[in-house]
Figure 1 (tube, rainbow, N blue to C red):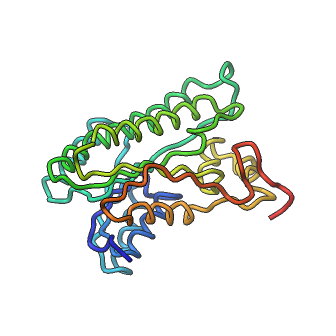
Figure 2 (figure 1 turned 135 degrees about the vertical axis):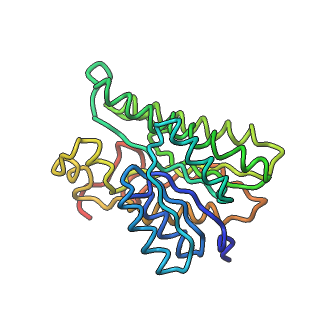
Length: 258
């Protein structure tokens, strides 16, 4: 049963990867889209394509979730236009570097904390009061298995995703008594631009992360997000943890060949 038709979904970081895949999967279910990313030309292309293909409304905006004033202005503009989302997908996030803590880059740390934690908070703080006023809505935070189990050289990224897990659980408690649901979707090894960003554009190193194995795809994660959002309104899926069959723990991956 499709319970999503006609709903409005806001997706941050929608220009590529999981965010773009979510846009495509939700559009296929008849939802209207609010797409945002720093690469505004790319989200405009996606919005135009999906609007034409599925006959939905799709708006694209430039947004850096780390810019608190910009986030506030963006959500105020949506609310003023009557476009408060039914579903918020906090997807914007990144990993930078793969270093021991005592050798890590402070700039990388700032980028991860500002995007993965503060960016999620800024967007949520701006959107959720409108959901509370309406007494309906669903927040889906894209977490990671890195927010459940640590791994070598990932301390700060781990910490940011542990924060997402804590925030998701705490939001659920804070929203008790409302009809607003909060979920997190926590994927394991997933092949997107993620590793290329982590390694500052080093495509050879990024490709090696996924070589000789079969990781999740962005479509797999988007499919899970649709499943979570499509649950009956009296059902709140707190957390969905997913890994490729070849992975059973962050450091345990079958690389005997895909």
